[in-house]
Length: 232
Length: 258
Image (cartoon, rainbow over all chains, first blue to last red):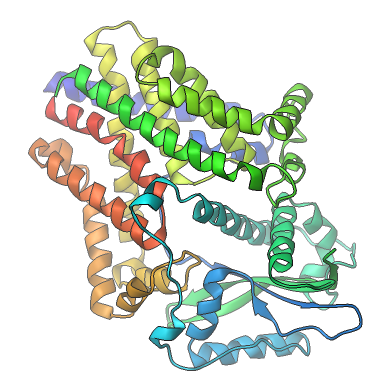
């Protein structure tokens, strides 16, 4: 028994030493590269707590027409819009009205069975091939990453036509455009709109729902608000 | 359980896990390689500080031969139980290359656990074949399996929103995972989320008990497997089922030797 315990602790020691050596080695490599190799040193901190839930809204128009209503981009958000509590909806609209003349299309009816439309296919076959859902999860990961990246960016005096000048995010728009996460998310938004609509221009908003345990409601925190973007 | 049986089971299960992941990736190849949000010309921005020869190789590999890379991984995974010492190093390379293509990982924790498994099993073969050193790889794998549940449980326990059930409720009703409607309805019941939260916290935090009471290992492994199946039905995390399944033979073997 003692011998096996020694073996077990030897394994722990080897593991910790490896982690230490890897971290030392990574000190000579720029930080982003460390993130790319995170598969080699797992953290195992799954679903640690209440984290901001990223959301995307978009609207579109054709040449010479007005923009549509704001619509949720993510599939699960279509249910979310119907699912939110009326208190939260008021906050949501208020936030938008503070910054622009835009309004979201928000329903405030109580939740009913018909509103909960999420019916993902989860069967034995999908257990062995759930590729579409896993691909969608990678996009969600990139949206979260983009929100984190934006929050870490230092504001710069440069401006770009891609973002509204009325929001703080506009001040460092050039930096945002150079982010890999932005490029991926932007392409994803464009792809999704093209799949659903025939349009020439679109705008989008990216933000996150942050749950407030005291009020027991989620609050909207906006990270990015685009100006006109060309679809084609 | 003998060391040979543990080895065979681990290799067969790892082969299955890798095949599931590789075939999924193969079916996504056409959606990932070109004209997609995951196009290489978006992702290569992350690698501009890497050595030029690596960047050049990645350009070539990810634009022209990504599908071939996946096919090679499938072939290697099929042959894994037959020639593990020769195949595991190549699988580590292909697996890492696929992860890099997706900015570090494709499916979070399941990728990390698969990599841990590959490295652990490699340890079994790079040392001389004596029983003492042979076991180190299994101990490392069993250690990671235990640690994955334990850390996950402790961080939840430390979080008041998990202890009150709020985190689980918010997670099941507001997150971007496609949670089935029936589960969302259940998550709106206070009793369900509070009980569920504490069951998860207790199960995960107490996982190291298998090292103190080896007789509990079978029970814990069964519960862990069911836990991952439930996760799949609630959140769609199918890869986690297989990635953790691979670690159970090593865990059983190591705890039974105590």
